[in-house]
Picture (cartoon, rainbow, N blue to C red):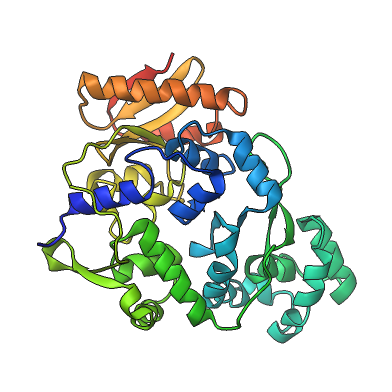
Length: 377
């Protein structure tokens, strides 16, 4: 029988530890869920609070310090937190996309140097970033090495595609708004992005499958023909299943497929929640009527209420509680579940950043009408 949209929803929730919080270490949790969107420093912490039983944010601080997990630019040309064991393959798989996004951009070409000139400096850049360096540090280093060039230019491009990651800088979420860079802990590269892409595709299916070729390409921002070639090369490591309307989907053997009627608890997902961005067809998690509400015109993805596995509204901290806006009526049992989550979230945020995401408050003046309640007070 073909899988329904609801069955796919439950598969994602189970694989992403959103059906039931897991009892596992932070590195193991990151490995399990594959990648956590990290454009906003707080979001990986909120994501793991949603997924790990008794999550202690200090454990993620320590994992960053020990470099068991790393934060860097990989899939979708966006900052993600991934397990250190995955980073080298993910980054190499993304090289064609990462390089094209910067080296074909006028903001690089304005510097007036060739791609070969810049590539020849990678080894020196890695030596320079043996200890953490700021953007200003690296711009100054390039000025001394190449002469003062037009900005943003060389370092702006290289910090995306060179094998560097973000270094912890302190603050409530290990990283602030002014990044520091350090050479990635694993510098091994086979020089074969297509082989590395097979690793990325398999890992994606483990954490987000079953999924289509278009979903995988959207998740990583790579060309579909590369995804198809990777799936073909994976052979028996990938199986084919039928999705809604018998759409051909791919999965890993033994991937979690819970019954579609299994209950899904309420969750308060953070900004840029990965499960909302991991598919071309976002109706797996986001009703079409709400897609443009939670994803704003500039790409900001708001913190969302997850009810029965689907986005039902948005939330934000305010003085005295969590303001929840539901886009459709919810029963009192659901509100009670959201209130329990809000109490836990407020306790989690209290020692770090009680009004997390406050700088995005402008979007709340542009929401559609809904039921608004203050929870967790």
